[in-house]
Image (cartoon, rainbow, N blue to C red; front, side, top):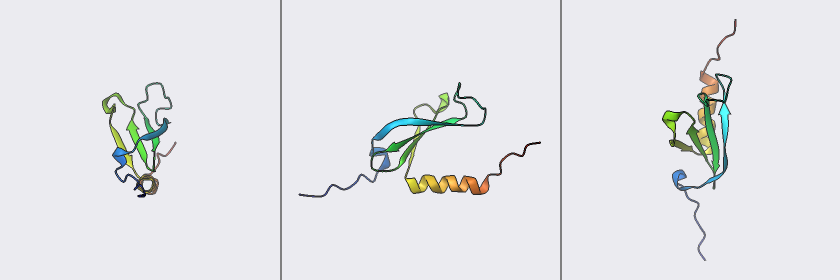
Length: 84
């Protein structure tokens, strides 16, 4: 019997479960203009989709470490807007 090797190509992995919508910015989810959606991939990793009409059907896939590295970069480099 041969051990099954995990699929290393994230784009060949099926999506596990539902997409979760992460929204911010305009304070409303009605038009989904400031949202993205995220779903886990079977075998690890994530699929990220744009919720805007122009991005419909487009998807980016990343490993957990890639997604965490990206998020940490944003936290470290983006200055939140100041409130008056």
